[in-house]
Length: 114
Length: 224
Image (cartoon, rainbow over all chains, first blue to last red; front, side, top):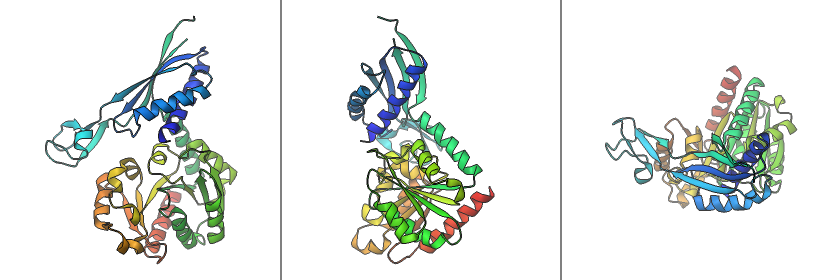
């Protein structure tokens, strides 16, 4: 349900981009999702397969979904670490003065068009 | 077969919505209208809290409410009946959140410039509403004691986004194993700048503090 809203937002934008670029069809779409973006890749793929039928240019589009690792940075010891494994607490110095550097993105990377 | 070529996009999936939300926020700033996006899980007490708050501020400022739900108009009717202020019901057409375009169409329908503050009661959900920027000038959330003090650990984004967290149903604390101090620590862990106001819509405890908070926010927003 949650993924569907994001998928619709993407297919709507890609349809507009396809139209602007006067293409016949979109062959593939590459999307990057971060490990902590709250997007479940399998649900996302299912939603995409359903949603693409409702578009003008993406009916035969193949989805390439790339999952990006989540990394956090510690402001105290200046090191990065794996967010999924250690959460908000730095495993090097136990500080909680940390922030997410990468891993929460949902990004439209590129399309192949004909 | 035509020629295949690649178009690089390199943009956030939410970029279109974020741009429209920024434009809407700017329009609201120019019109000196505050738009408060109210989020929570279903049943945390959004409508009840808005009713308590609005009844305390409606004589001092002009207020409207936009209710967003998947279906029905029970919330909009409830607000009109219990507060007398203008209310409009938006239907999200099955979607679990409101986006900037839906918010804009709701605001246009009520002629937003005549109000000081408009509350947008988002769809009850702790995940999707946090991701789609509505264009609101302030994001707040309500967490009820029956949901548990660990929610900030489970739903990081919504707690990071909201600078006011209202802990509702504190009259029911004795029935649940909800540790208020632990909950406050968990909220601060996600967002150290968050203001936290515990309230009860039944006993009205905390409603005065909430009223003062909003009247001050409206004043500083108008002066900015």
